Image (tube, protein in one colour):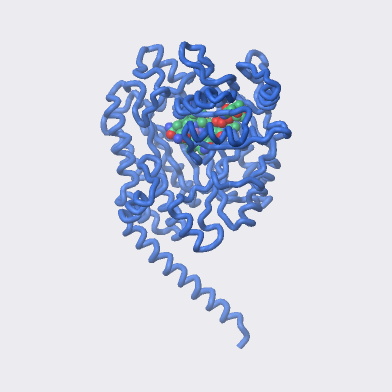
Length: 500
Ligand code: B12
Ligand code: SF4
């Protein structure tokens, strides 16, 4: 799914300028193709945003674009954290003409004007107040024209299935997931997270009316194109202010603005039964929970002691009772982890209602308290790990295992969580749920497997389907039985009301 910032900044661009957007994941191009595209379109300024894990690739693109004589401005979390790197002020080569530090909602129009007038400055920073960035209030919030734009980049249906699904009817080959923010900021300050530092601990919300209006526009579009549209509320912690979240969800229900949605909420906030009921009634289908570890010592080490592993089962049961899926995220390679942590975590997970677990490793992102702690104690093996990005290879050595062992733990967790056997077990464990709920859970499992195991071409999908044929067969059989039963009931009901 492409990131929100591009669409937001496009909307905030002075109207006399045209903005073209390319997401490097949804629409990959190499350096030469990108430069050609920029020349063909006669583009005068290129803005590039990237997370730390993509920054080396972003720099390569920026270098090629600047070599072709087009100015580049970079923004986003990574360059905000280490701006001197992009500007070539730390001994390395320069990659950007300018950097936009922090939230750029208010500086972007100025950047565009300065570039148009040939007076681009090196750094753009939001105005400060008491030595801190003044944060955009999000009120009023710009109207992103989702209803008018081409949503092809947001389609999550893999290319290999699209044409077959489209033959089944209009809209079948399209499942768009659209990023929406309802607020910014999280004050919790987990040690590995950049959010508290970047967005500050000042939490800000859009008005309920503005969020509801955005949902209604999307809902109208979904209806018109007969395609599926779901929403990803990208707020760091969607229920950080429970009272406000409940009021937003009530307003969504009252306005009949429900679309299927996913959001990130920390486990401690999901103790609230009323909140969970409102989530379900307002269209909430998946909740992403940063569980991180089943070990309280690890959680305390990373300043996330508010997560209580003994509560995880109850939280997940509460969600499952309302047919809400949990995407549970775990981090291995914490300082108290030992060999076997993956297996111990899997054993716990299997006692919970089935969710969609994801596994990563503790990563010191620049400017986080974790980075500073590890750097101060000389524990960073690759202090600039982002410059030679290696997926699932840690940049520091945990205290009780090696980097290779940590990698093996991640591999074990992914392999077992999404094996055909586990998929079948997960679906059997929810046999009392309606069949459509179980089908969508099963499909989600196949997609989540693809986060770790490359699953891009036809052959890869064919293999996955063949391996899971027995679960697929049972689900199809049950759907046919359920469909026939529903049809029979309908016919009987019609017969009962017909006059004799
Ligand atoms: C949604 C989200 C996701 C979604 C992505 C879906 C999507 N495509 O949107 C999912 C859940 C898949 C995800 C995954 C990951 N994510 Co994430 N994610 C976020 C989240 C919560 C919101 C991003 C967002 O849209 N923010 C709102 C917009 C408005 O803010 P923004 O992007 O910062 O943009 C503003 C400014 O930065 C600036 N700006 C940004 N870019 C540019 C470019 C230019 C040219 C200019 C001028 C300005 C500018 O202007 C914008 C307006 O002010 C952020 C946290 C956060 N609140 O930002 C983390 C975050 C971006 N993710 C993070 C991480 C680490 C990851 C993962 C690596 C986690 C993991 N271990 O697997 C994966 C990577 C997946 C991948 N390969 O891409 C980190 C990145 C830290 C870093 N330094 O790189 C963040 C900051 C959270 C954190 N915990 O620290 N993520
Ligand atoms: S609760 Fe989530 S968003 Fe908030 S600081 Fe912790 S990891 Fe970051």
